[in-house]
Image (cartoon, rainbow over all chains, first blue to last red; front, side, top):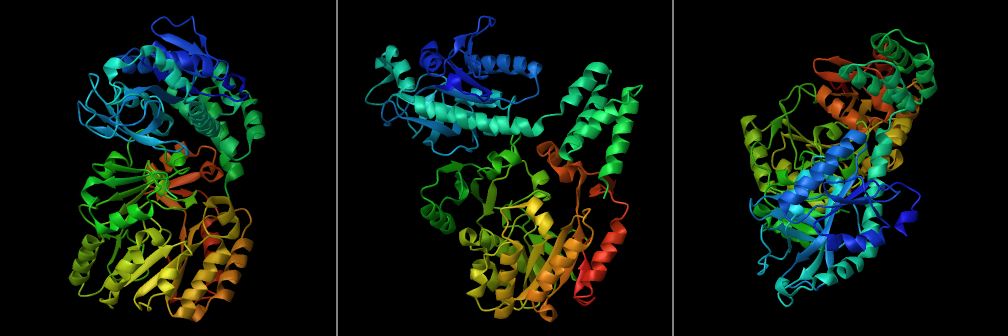
Length: 280
Length: 328
């Protein structure tokens, strides 16, 4: 089970409807987050988070913005974003599912193309509409949130880590007007292996990225001890990254332990030291 | 080979595109408006995209043949470059392309006839001459089985014997050349760094031995070959890696027949460097001290001049001064 995973899964899952969330809460071992008031939120100990946005583009953009802004205050690490939801298609079987590799907003006519780094998934087009589509003119999954989700989520993460996964709930033979809403959790649950695999893949990429960007602990210690301007913080951050990349973390600690009298002096000492040691 | 193939609507009916889509029918294919909708968008990450690059089939609009940067070439003739592709299948950590584009996807411009027309116009402007470089924004040969670049462009230069084509590469995909009658005004220029540098920074690149073997075959077949020692990244090991590399290369190839040999230091525009540092803050190469001159960033080294002179002295013990030039 995913809740037993021993590694972090920094993934935000965004669904429009509580019925779409229902199966995911069980599959992913999520618990209701009582602290959240604006949206229904669920999380588990692996850093997985699920938010229920409400239906339509405005609602999902608001939910992504709400969560993205809050997480941006919590730290610099990026998270993956995954929109899971039901969609209609002209003739795709009920219960089939795919990752969107082209998301077209019917209203504006613009398309976005989520980069596909994770292998092994069915892929296809997604069209976002304002009102439920009953004719399905294009060979695409029709739904009501993906374009706004993608546009908003790419403000908080890199495009490679923003994906949409759509499960077909209606088609010409099984029109949207006849959907039994109670079957939605089952449609989502049937995709559990795919969804877990997708979350694993996205987590791996996000964790790898965050690890490459991780600063030595020294950086945070200095920031808590000395007042730094924003530009000094940037200089210090880069200096700490350089020490780490050059395998000089012990030297970094030695210089920072010299108790410089000011941030300016510390940055100067760190710069002189690393340039002296690393110049060929 | 590709995670996805994106196809500009405008080139969907091109024979070249149809053939490629048939060949890669198992790869997901997505039609887009213009390639800029997919390539080089904000919020893209070159480092992440390198994990699974896509191929974008597009039409090149605007200027197709551009003046080469000053100091790029090996003689005083007017020199130009053209890029039928953007980005490279290899993943060299020192490469400026990482800072030039935010996307690691490969863009293949399929309107070869338009490139051909532009090249022929430029040749005409230069009274039949000029030097034309391919491989500035990509590796010209590495995707040859997909692009058929040589098959199209070698005959162009065969028709214009006073114009020179330099194909810059690190690829061993030379079958297309070996199967073709030699084009005497075409030079295959292979780039090398020391074995240590290759191991540390050249990911997915064929080994020095394999590249040398490919060059050897080309030389035996009568093709003009050249060696590019770029970028020179001086290390604490001193001259030993260069001694070893030069011995390896010049004992394998017929030195007298080498078209040219050049060297060039690690340099890149400041903006590119900044972007690469953001992508690879954990990379040792970009943690070294640097200095900026005229908008270009270089590794700061008190001994750079003396090292470079020593490398050149060593090189000139193998090749003649007429064969050698230093790339600015």
